[in-house]
Length: 585
Image (cartoon, rainbow, N blue to C red; front, side, top):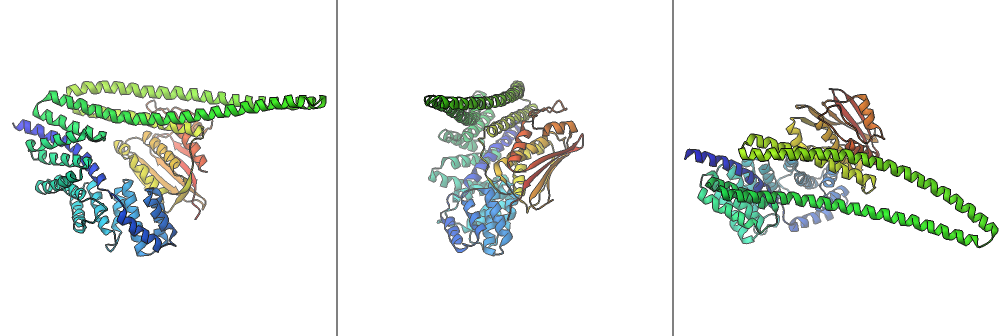
């Protein structure tokens, strides 16, 4: 009997995966639902401070949910104005935006700078509670949520009381204060059932089930898992369907009903595959649409050239009827046009041959890399199936991590290929604006945090916080992502990656990405910087790349009026030196 309870305890620990998923969803529903009251406050302040251009721009981008631009203009307002009221609003904008960008510690720092006299301070408490909950600081989160509960009224429009109760219940559950957790979770679910909002109800059922499961009250927990499963059939959220099926799998395994557990496990796999297939279908459809547009544009150009040739022939016949002199003149003209068109066609043919050669070379290596990735994935999946039968969970975890790494590599290759193709066909739209460089590097660091942790790499963001550059934001992110990905790929474990700036003149900013990796020879650097070299291979046989990412970076840097240089030594690391124009204030 004791052995059975230990097994159940292990299964309950696994169910905390579902609890964490529920927590993320709960936080999502705890966001501000509408801006009726808040909009009214913002509208009044915009009219009151008409001359504060940066504040009005920050407010505009905040309402448009353009978080990067909100951060830029709110920082400009803070640097130029000492008005305490405007300072509170700007810190609120920045805290809200940083949380949306998942920079939680920075968001908390901004919100803590807001005065308690701020008119929207009840929202500040709620936001601080949500941030603390996401950081697993449950005692602190409870303090903030209780303050928000005190300020809550029935006329409150910014968030639902059911979400507040749900978050409080979740905090007490993590602290093993089961009585308090039970009180708040049932308060939440009773309100949610009246509101008939299916997704938060499913989350609450998950939380209540886990509450009882952790106390070994299986008979009370299972009905809520079953309720969540039944309700998940009525929603379109694949994640909820998948989580509900997984929970029922564990429930039936604990009951010893392995036949039913297998049915739920297959259903879980089906929902997981459906989610992946949906994402793939959307990506392929988008690519096919762009390809069709490009083909139509080429057809239009061909028809235009054909029309020009027909017009030239018509003109020749017209002038031949005028007389011998005009015939001679027209003949000379047509001959000259023919020579000119021949030269153009020859130049176009040579360029097309060059592009076709590049395309064939690119497709050959990309298809080889993709084939290698898919073959590795097939081999790993075969091992995964065998390991699943033996229930060797350590090896199973390693295989899942290996599959994820292979899929990420293939996705990165396809993403670079798509952007390179769009750049070659001039389908990428560049819109230059003022960008806060430090904030962008922070975002890139967050996106690659799992890879950095996987190789135990130290990341340091030493970019000056006062630097704004004038570039296209999307292409800048593509460049920094590719260079950071390369730095991680070619760094040894326990290495270091550093982003920092050097202010050499007033017009350009020098950004340096330095790693302590394997480095490269001078000949390799020259090959990478050469305009004619699209593809390259590294000396390390385990690390082979197409060079497409760096070619993409070079072209995007050039379109942003910047430059790139490389300094490197074997086994001593690499420096990627970029320059971008500063924002002219």
